[in-house]
Length: 180
Image 1: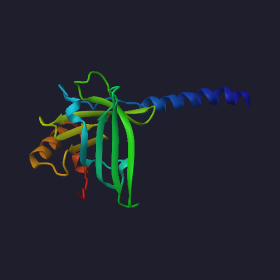
Image 2: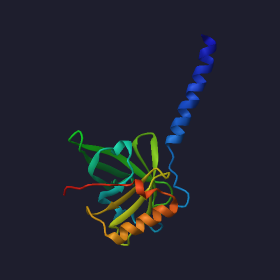
Image 3: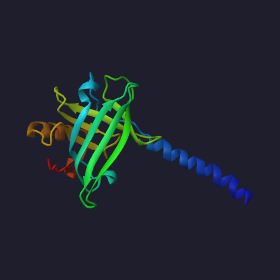
Image 4: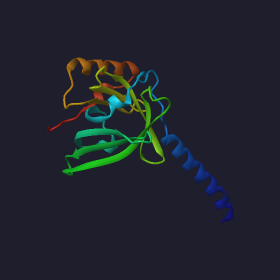
């Protein structure tokens, strides 16, 4: 029994460490570049999710929004809401985001379950901060956001082309329904 404990405990701790380390990936996909000269004050507020991949944590959801607000200590509050149309109920998840480096580069890390952090990278945004293309830390995570429930075709095409160049399979995007 003592031999088993001598092996099992270090191995278990090592595996747990690897899981935590790999879940804290705040990188950016190869070929993607975060927006420079980013203005967080202009980014704050409510965004509508226009498109995304089929993530487990957003499965069967429409009317999805993300609202960003900044606290005095510089941490950004992330309030995600959506309607689960199968369960017929609203879901909400509150997290926080922090800049990976400087506040003028749109590379952030976000957490809804500390100490697990994930990459949140604004890789394209229009001059008026009305439409944003957001990449996670890998080609598994991509969002198209808008200040309204619709997006102009020109912006839609611009974001899709950029995502494809990076390596995203945009055919797998889910176009989110909004009943507002």
